[in-house]
Structures are given as C-alpha cells and as structure tokens.
Image (cartoon, rainbow, N blue to C red; front, side, top):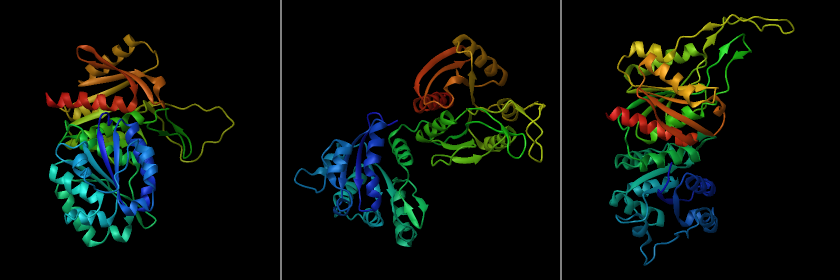
Length: 386
C-alpha cells in the first residue's frame, strides 16, 4: 500500500511515543521507507536508538549545518509525506502559529512551505484536546490541507489512532486520488439468519476482502459507506447489519446518492422463520429454507444506471467454471465487472481472483487481500472515469 513511499516521521513528547517503534515497523511492512525526527521531550520517553533500530536510519534530534529539515522536507527533499505521530497539543499549536523551535516543528514549517503532504496523529489528554485554542489550531492547520487522523477517545485521553488508521491516511495522502469526489458503497463479510434467539445460519466469510476494497477506495479519495456485521473502521461510514434483508435495506438507502456499489459480501441465499424461543435439542428438526432476494438484482432494478461490481465465490476450483458463473450474474444484473474466486480463500489472507467483464475473462490477481482491494479499486476508478 505504501510501496516506494518515503515517510519523514516526526515524534513529539507524548507517552504515545512508545508506540512509534511498532508504527515504523508497520509503515515499512506496507512498503515505505521511514526516517525519524524527534523533539527533546520525545527523547525523554523513547530513546532514539530504538527508533533508529525500527527505521534503519539515524534519527534527527537537532537541526545542524546539514539543514536536515530541508534535506528531508524541502522542495527537493527526500520525503513524500511528513507524518507527525504522536503530535502533542504543544506541537499542533506551534505549527498553527508557524513557530519552529524543535526539529519536528521546523520540519513541519518547511514541509508546509514546500507543499509537501502532511499527516498529523494527535495524542493528549482529552481536556487538552477539547481546549478551544487546540481546536482552533487543528481547524487552522486543517484549512491548509493537512490531514488529521482522529484520536481514540478512551479513559479520558485522546489516544493516538491505531497503526492501521495512521498507515491508511498516509496512503491516502500519497496515492493518486482517482476516486476523489465519488461515493462508493461496499458490502462485506457474512450475513446471518436467525433460527431462534441463539442459533444462526451463516457462512465462513471473514469480510477481509470487502474491508480491503473499502479501504482502497478511501485511499484513492472516495467517500465510502461499508455495510457489514464486522468491526468499526476509520476509513468508512459503517452501516451495521446482520441479516440479508437488513443488508438489502441498508444498501438501497446508501445507494440513493452513490456513484458505485461493490457487492463483496457473502450474503445468505436462504432464510428461515425464526422461533421466538430457543429450540430444544435432542430431537430431529427440519428447517424450511426460503430464498432471499438477490441484492444486486434489487439494486439494479432501483438504479438502472448505477455501476455495480459483483463478487462470485465457487467451490469447483476450476477457472472455466468460475468465469462461467461470474459471466452469468454479470449478464443477469448488468454488472460492470465481476471478481470470481475460489471459496477456499474465505478466512485466509492470500487469495487468487479472476476479473470477468462482458468480453469474458480480462485479468487475474494472485496475492494478499490488501493487494486485491487495491486492484478492485483501480478497476472501479477506470470504470467510473470512462
């Protein structure tokens, strides 16, 4: 997701600085190169040697005659983005006032003057985050085009965002905004049909592929709505649903002003009339299964011109069969394209997928689901750009 991206990492004196080693590792796992700059206060919490170990670069702890701030963040500098994580109230206030009396704030002044992308991940106690002056400073800095990764408000503290959230916003700041201004609805994961208050009919889909598609669309500039029964995410508005009927209702509402739908969820094909009380065990039981409406068909009927991307999982393991089934639903619902894969990838990180359009099989992907999300987002961007 960050392959070839150079990240200058500015570390301020919050206790959240202890998380910088793992953040630097995660940035590098996603393909970035990282060089760090630290304030004196940050050095009191985290030794520069630890950060040097995490980044494999010497850490800038003072501005010398080598003009490190220009070398890193100037117009011809090394960095593609300046990431301030953690950023204290003190650091944010100084940046807003163009005060550059630490290595980190001097890099920020240089980056903003040079037009470099800047991403800020604040961390402080909640009353400090709520201070009118701090809020004004954040608003002012945001008005300059700086991206803020919202903190997690827990235990009276505005805790630094997760590594995933920070990496995602760094990717958004350094990726071509091919979906800017677009509203994309993504469905993800399994749906569940109640048998009784305890038991469910469901499937093994983890939702990882759909979440990666949603994240990739956000990284490329889209406003994303994610419809699923999974975790909260920072890169999309989440509509939480359980059953196939709930998912259909939520998607129909979300698609009223959407530019595209990506239907990646493994939606239940059947439902049952749920018992009001727990069904007693120990005896044979027959369930009458009723088919559920096909989501892509219902959305197509309501929105004849909406670009829709479908997913089709098969258990045959045979490419010709997967393409044939993908082509069948593509033709039935007039889909833009279909991503076909083997059902054995459910719950796994690795995947192999075939891209099927009106003309037949047009591409193949083999790798992890993060990469597949990016490939789907790129195909969608090309579709919307035509």
